[in-house]
Length: 227
Image (cartoon, rainbow, N blue to C red):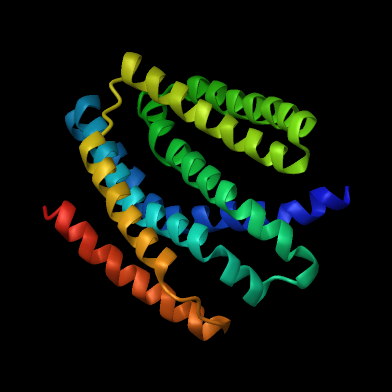
């Protein structure tokens, strides 16, 4: 129970950070897909979802990449000392799980909603719960509490892959692979730069690194995706 309490802080940071980044675009983006579906048909609605996914990942990827590389500094600045070691250990997986789960909820699952197949979206959500809990129990048995976190993350990834395959095969989901890969490349450039930068102490130092990371990411994104 104590270990679970320690791990929960880092897990919640990753999930909440991803949700906040995602909500910047999703609240306005999905209604656009619904409107295009009503006015121009499901094919155009799927194209709008693909555009939404690009906008979503443009914000989500650097936010989670920044959390991954700056997680120790953020933890030292805002988390109580008793929770720091566990939080620092969990944040990389929590950030990855947050990114994956939000891409599923706010992109791949939405193709089912456009088709008015909420039952399929519900089945994917149930699959996420079963896969995440099942793999978490396996990870817990093999590697302890951190194995449970790895298992939950793996469950989110498995669900995204299966949900994407179902959406593409039967519901016309369009995944803009080229754009998504370029965004991840720009994020990798930012993460590499921050990884090799000297650590700064305190909230002010963290803010400086966040601003520097944002500038580096913007330049890298323009370079790989000028359009």
